[in-house]
Length: 128
Image (cartoon, rainbow, N blue to C red):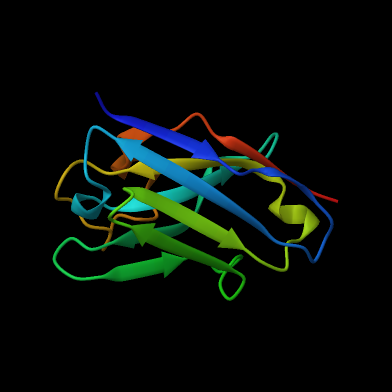
């Protein structure tokens, strides 16, 4: 049974930091492209970061978070984290963890929402 469970969201002032975590079960995160998406009220869900070790290690970031957010993967714990620094009010959103099908890497697909078949329930991040 595939499951993704996010944790670690919360409220923080602008300029602060938060770390959200995604615990995966039923599959190995190292066999997939793992990504963090976010969705603000009234807006479409957008990818912010993706990471894979399928074939070769690759990490991707959207322009809006590059230099501020860091995605990391712990294969021993089967988790994928997103460290968010220098947070801005526009980072306020529900953050979702997502995974592609097994053995699918990120290259060429990480920006496409439909590439990801497994999703968590989300964790709220609010920046004031």
